[in-house]
Amino acid sequence: MAKEQSLDNLWLAQTLYDLGGVKFGNFTVSESAVSSPVFVNPKVLISNPTALRVASKLMQQEIDLAQSLRRPRVHPFSVVAGVPVGGLLLASAYSLETNIPLIYARSRPEGTGKRGIEGHFTQGDTAIIIDDLITRGSSILETASLLEENDLKVKDVIVLIDREHGAVERLRSHGYNLISILKLDVMLMHYMSRGLINEETYRTCSEYVRSKQSDTHTGPLGL
Image (cartoon, rainbow, N blue to C red; front, side, top):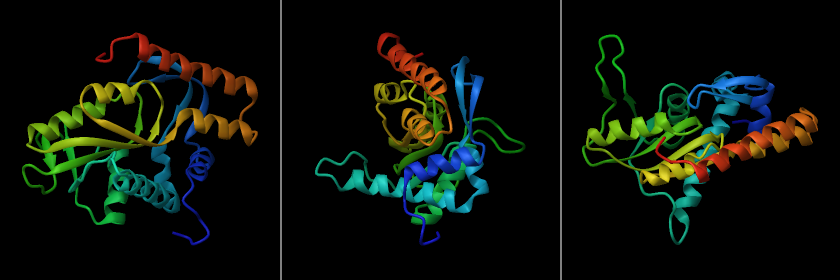
């Protein structure tokens, strides 16, 4: 990583915007199947090696901090599990950065490969799940279930971006701890402060985020 580039999550949010990974308009969020005024695609970070490295280092920094607390917020783990596709790209970068072995759960048969786990692991190992973006957390819950079916333990999940659709509470209800590097509302505030979006767009998107947070507190977590 270039020495002049510090570990800054807002720099990462800006780079994501510059790469075309954040768009405003009217989009359907696939997992929730609802209309959203903002679309985020973290996969574009692979086009900027420095940004990908910063992302992996920010995850490492957050995990190290969480494990160093008197009451650690992240359990010890021996393997990293990436959620295909975006999470697998990030997990690969993290694995290379930390030298922690990588695996991934293939929840659907692909080609001649069966449903299962790719990579070497020992039964009873604890895995941390990495994904690039979380909305409600369904793909992460599916990955965690498959890992546990193969005698791996899952305690913690780290994602690059949390769209704030109640994933923290939903994962907690299933026994998993969620950590994120960027939250959608922080990104929106940054974009408005830089003049990249106007106040009306910011207000529309912020109200959308708040409505999803409100839905979480009033609706069933399991849906």
